[in-house]
Image 1 (cartoon, helix red, strand yellow):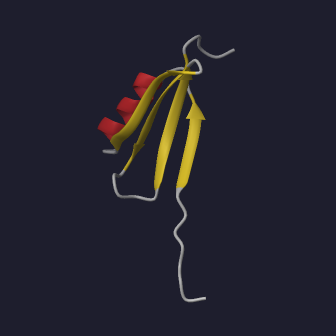
Image 2 (tube, one colour):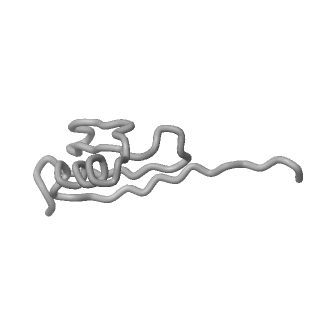
Length: 67
């Protein structure tokens, strides 16, 4: 087989401190916010990574906090 296929990887984690987590990865480590969403089935979320990379991190927070 002569063709190579690249995988895309997403690591998603819940948090109760979404703003602090985003600040750490964006401001501290220099990752870019590449996407976000609000109130999707009760969750807010932010995706961070390098714009052209085949991976990104996603952090979510439930609007009511953790159970």
